[in-house]
Image (cartoon, rainbow, N blue to C red; front, side):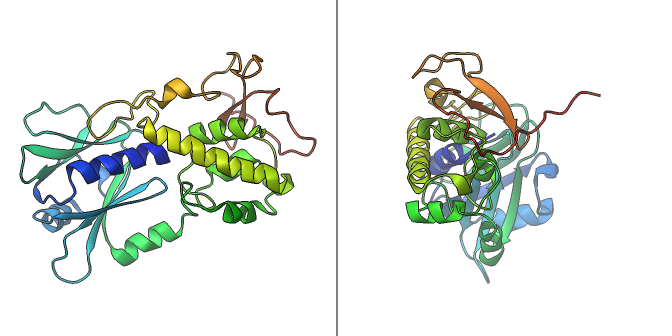
Length: 289
């Protein structure tokens, strides 16, 4: 599932390839990915220039040229398998392409693909966009150390669950939560409210470092995520624990283990990330019927 580094990579690509260009043609191939009626979507977006590209957490918003009234924004959520690419208009359409936005000045178009169709596109006003963003916690790439420490005070559940809760911290998902906890030597079941100030500040620094390196490497690609040019990211080559169950820890050579927290697989090293005495309980995986 695309997380902050993947969405930031897409945002940077759009700033380079689409910012300042007008949308000259709109084709909706599968209206199910729209939260705006297709006819309204096409009528409102066609002919407008892309004036800004915003991101908070995993939410992406394209600011569109004002006509009458409030500015308009195209809000995108990639969901689990969504892709946003800028391609030559003449290139054959890839499977699961749902929306095409033609750009002026070149034979290019923005394409939105989504194999599982959990991603969504929506037109909204500034007030509507701000209302959505207000429900998110501080952006994980921008939150200050002191604010991060204060937000963790009194939290009794697992630190992994807290990191995944977008109301407290926007943008961190399963991959980068595991990687940051490993870098900070914190067990995924540790309780945020019981961690020392030093440990929490070390985790804040680890999150910043992991996210920064992942953005530099264009994100992590396992199956679906691609950057704006349709190329996979390469951070998966740097993963320390995520997806490495049974493989040796790169620091101590103990086998990486996996447990379930908040319904998600969590990977950790039992030696580098010892389980604290007071910890949350892991989630029991569902049994097949």
